[in-house]
Length: 503
Ligand code: ZN
Image (cartoon, rainbow, N blue to C red; front, side, top):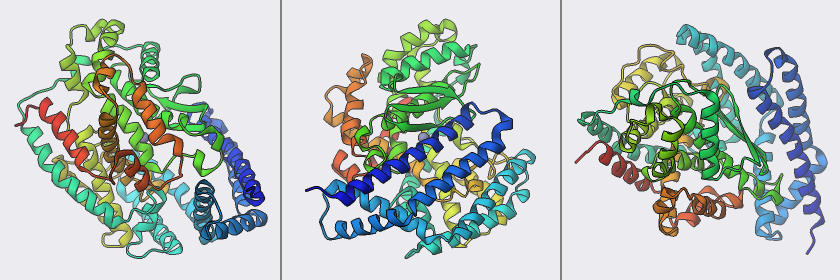
């Protein structure tokens, strides 16, 4: 039966999505192309479109339709898909409605100022220059949590924006279990007699040659370069304007090609998710990717489970050796594989390997949860941070710049964001284990350079649904069970016990 209100509502959502696309293109352009002097005017243009989007989203006739459809959804008058579209949009509306305009303005101003202060503080490696700004942001985020409401922890509603329905208590349980495995496992690896020398794969790699090889690898994996582009930016990212227009970025190091290569494998995982969305659902939540953890599971799966596997490199390595005989001609696949997967506890999150990465995230989660709950003070952060780095990773933090000031997130008001990185890793291993069961001879296929069956499986198990289901249901449907961290720990154990010859 035709539902005229729903149809009209859906058309409005598409209209809003066009404005969002304009904003996404402007944002991509800012990171990739824009000359420095353009920043101020671009800021005005972006503000104009953000305002327009906000105005249209809260326009009376749009809200009336949304409220009417919400009633229809609650009384079972909508199809499953319509219901998902309406409820997702309603949730977003409620979040916006609960925040007074004055508060939004205050938060936006505080983050702009904090960002500048953070850049300066990091440059001078002095946390005290950033502390008053972070204090202000923490106060505002607590206030935001109050506006949105919560049952147990004020951290819950902040986490909910990135991972709907996951509470900080759930998160603590998952992370504590993971920590119990990771810390002793890392100790074992540190004691291993296997020594890996990353210098054996450094060399001189012209940018255009790296670019050509990167493109070869990601097209093999399944990123469609006729529906996407790769550009250069200071911080790599992926963004999708529509399934046929997905942009990813990378950066190049002249002496080490792994940095850019593993980076594009990661971003192309995000990109393939965006390319796999249902174009017919453009503008609705069914045509949008899931929240952060699932998005990150796609990038991690391609970067790590595939991109750092021996099977994939049995195919790619001879090609790499041919393109770059110096230094790879003299390096055996086995040696290359070990360098690719070297475990090295370090200070910087974005440079971390698979084993230590999640400890960086757990530290941030523990700190920001306590900050929001008010059980620790901003002023004590450097000391708390450094202590945790010593306890978990066994490294001494020599300066604030290499410690508590390294990430941009808190200055941007992103508190509750970090856990998704680790959840992505956990989901990636669980999804990959399911794919191994569902797809015959997956490893053999990789060795022959055939990654299409895996991509197809992800298309049909994850991508094409958009936000039709909750994360929990999507994962259960694809893998047969809810999140189970055992897949990730078993994966790490098997892989790194072999590399480091652990007993
Ligand atoms: Zn990512």
